[in-house]
Length: 132
Image 1 (cartoon, rainbow, N blue to C red):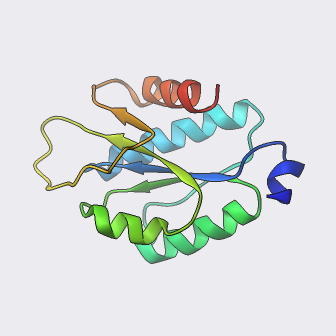
Image 2 (cartoon, rainbow, N blue to C red):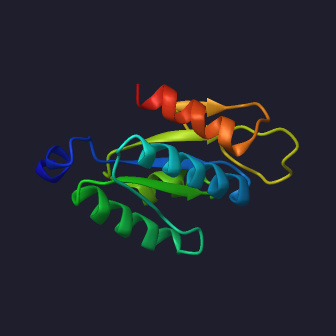
């Protein structure tokens, strides 16, 4: 918490969850750019990391005071909860039409994206809604 205060922000993880990994990664990258332009200290986790590694790394980066952006395309809600653990964060859920992948919706996400828009438009919406 002290590190976040020294950076003048609240450290947390933004969990981008949904059935399509490429969309999650693209929106997370655009959101990171927008947050960075607002003077926020961020880190985007790479989609190639193993889920357990994502959790460990996210917790470390939050402890360092950063806002971490973590795309997570795991279909099981229980597995996502296990990965997130006690790391403070908010869930941005992509409820996208047309996906054939079985995906359990998260319980009470901070934000639900249920329309098709560009990654930049969605990133603007996420930034505006979650960082007013």
